[in-house]
Image (cartoon, rainbow, N blue to C red):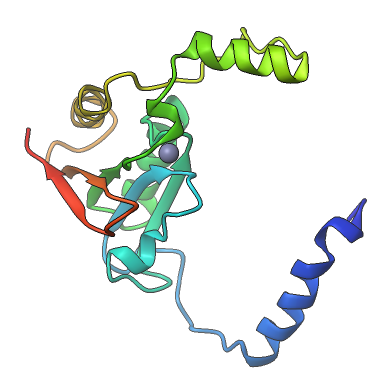
Amino acid sequence: MTDSGAFSDLLAANNEYRRTFTDSGLTGRAGRGLAVITCMDSRIDPLALLGLQRGDAKILRNAGARVTGDVLRTLVLAVYLLGVDRVLVMPHTDCRMASATDSDVHELIAKEHGIDTRSLEFRTVPDQDAALRRDLVRIRTSPYLPPDLAVGGAIYNVHTGGLIPVEV
Ligand SMILES: [Zn+2]
């Protein structure tokens, strides 16, 4: 690593971790056939909140839990190569991505850091419910994914730990 000082706490923690680590013998397949698309928000512990263990699910995270081209690419691989047969899209309450528009974010970064980000599409979500429904349709209608793939949506409440399923 180029700047090990910035990561020394992590390397120390890993020394502890590997001391008691035992190889689970798991493969890279999703043990419970699940892929979860959620936000990068650090309050979300996807495995714990869904009662999952290491090896059970593919967890895909990005800003706002959006179904982007890269998420679709990853889902295609997860479905055909890694045993995924159900997909849960799980944005959350109090998401920074749902409290601003792309132009707000461009403006903020320009003002505070002097960087022009206007060539990036942040995919902010002015209407979280509508964005989630659009993203579910995006998976359901992808020509690369099988028609019998189970696709569901739910909003995770970061303050109560509860999941609110979205009916479509
Ligand atoms: Zn978020």
